[in-house]
Every structure is written in C-alpha cells, then in structure tokens.
Image (cartoon, rainbow, N blue to C red):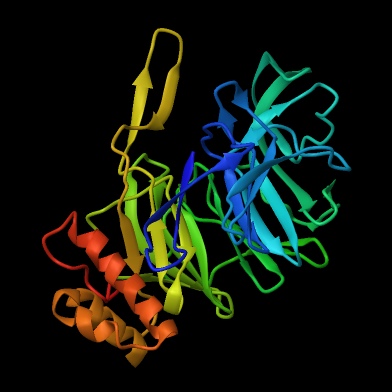
Amino acid sequence: MAIFSTCGEDARALREMKGDVPPLLSQTCSSHLQGRLYVFGGCDGNGHTNQMYCVNLDDGEFVWKRLTGAEGTPPSPRDKHSCWVYRERIIYFGGYGCKTVREINNVKNFTVDHTSWATIGTVIFRFWGWNSEVHVFEPETNTWSEPQTQGVCPSPRGSHSSATVGNKGYVCGGMESTEMDLHCLDLDTWTWTQIYPADGPLPVGRSLHTLTAVSENTLFLFGGLSATGQPLSDVWEFDTRTRGWKERDNRHKDQPRLWHSAGLGKDADVIVFGGTRDFTVLMDSVAVLRAPSENHCSDVLVFQTQPYSLLRLCENCIGQNASVLSKQVSWLPTKLKDSTRKRISYYSAHTEHQDTAPPTNTLG
C-alpha cells in the first residue's frame, strides 16, 4: 500500500507505507486527527471488519499501526458509515453490518436486512442490516464508548454523508427516498434534531454523495446516486442559519460522481477525488448485486466556493505559465516559493491528462 503526500515541493509525492499496513478495504471510514490518519471498518477480503488502523502523516516515516486492546466495546463490524471529529475524539455514525443475537437489543437503532450465519474472527454473527448508532473513539486513551442520545434519532442508514460545523454533527441522505433529509447531533449534549428546510428548491434524495463544511454556516453537497439509480453531478449549498438549500452552477456537470471522497482545501476549495461515474446492477444465478462499475475515476475535481485572494490568483497564473516563469519562481522567499511550486505541480499534473489548464472558477 502507498499514499500520495503533499509534503515538500512535489505535491504528487508517492510515499511507501510500512508497519501494520491495512488490507485492501472498501467502503471504510477515515479521519484526520492530530496529524494522524485513522481508518476504521469497511470490507476486506474476508468480509466486514471493525478493526482500527492509524498512521502518522507528520513524522515522515509513514508507519501504520493496528490499534488493539482498546477499552470499552467497539462497534460491530460495518461499512458505509461516516464520522465526525470533535474535541480530539472520532464519533462514528450509522452504516451497514452484522450483529450477534445478543446485540439485537434496540430495534429503533437497527433495521434487519437479512439473516445468515457468518464467522468473523471467533465471533458468530446472525443478523445483517442498517444502524443509526453513535460510537465514540478517543485515540489518546484508546477507548470506545456509546453515548445515550436524546431527541429524534435518524432512521438506520448507510452510504450517507456527514460534516462537522462547530459542535454540531450533520448527516444527510443515505435513504432510498426521493427527498433529502437532514439531521443534526449536538456533540456536547448528544441531542438529535431533524432539520426541516425553509421553503424553496431541495436536492433530490441520494446516497454515496459527499457533504463538506466550507464555512461556519455553509455545507457543500456534491454528487451521489439518486433513489432512481441516476448518477448525479449537481452542487448544493445549505445555510445552517436560514436552513435554506441553494443549487449552485458548476463546470463539472458532465462529470457525475458517486462513492467519491471530498475535503476542504486551500481558500475554501472543495477537493473531490476518486469514486466512479456510474452504478451497475450485476446479475448472477443466486442474487442481484449492486456495485460500482469498472468506470472508476482517478482525476481531481476542484470547486471554488468563494472569491480568491490576489495572492492565490497570482499563484494560479504562475502555475499556468510555469514554462516562462520558472526562473522568476526561484527568486521568491522560501515559504512563497514552496506554495507556488505546489500550484505548478498541480497544473502540471492536470495538463498530463488534458490539453488545457483547468479553470480557476468552477462554480458559477
């Protein structure tokens, strides 16, 4: 396993992994906390897992550790879950997975999809389905806990999206519904609130999408798969103060994306990577399997959500014209030179796949 890093001058540096490298995983959940990347759950070659791995991204060693011996009870094996990071804790919500007979003690937080016997490690599982549980992991003490929530909990779900704004954890979608629902969990009081949007247009219900906090009061929704099986490429912003949705025009409308990842970049850019462009129903003699097609994506989509500063505009200009400005770049102060070279690397990587440089403004 390897990871791409933005360390140093080369924004595309490939770093080899060492240590307890995780197996190949799908539909897992990862988060960044105090310079470390944490990966929990997902599916490996043996099925669903509830194993936690972490790697330090700041020490330059990139040595993975498999976290074992945690206190408390970890979540049952699952995938398609999400998480929030708040006050040095990682808070997991929802997902699809398996439970033992003894674990089926709260029908409100778990919806059985089917029953079948499966052995994971030394534990025999019986029930498979969706959950709306909340689990908290504290890396400093290697401890799991399950807080008792209040209010109206979202229905059990997976393939949803979540984002953190202040002390609020937001979750939306993931249900086979034609309407988009939105819920908020107060991460101090553990109180759920269903958010009823203001009058106006609403995004269609979806799953396999992303939700990114781009400011103290704005959530950025992109892509996913509609309840009717349509891959989506629309962009919506939700204002947490007015509770209103607003669709934004964008230049990636011809690039639908689902099962992707998204993160907040420099100057409030939303960076989208990976995923697939469509969704295929695979048939065999036993069952109908729904899975992403082989049309996977390796490109990066960048969405500008606010006007750029003069410095950013200058860096973009230099990045697009590096061939004629390379000498002048070497004259810059070290800090400015490093950031400019990263912009040059970005545009260089993009032009390896396209004849023209990417637009600096990707939202109308």
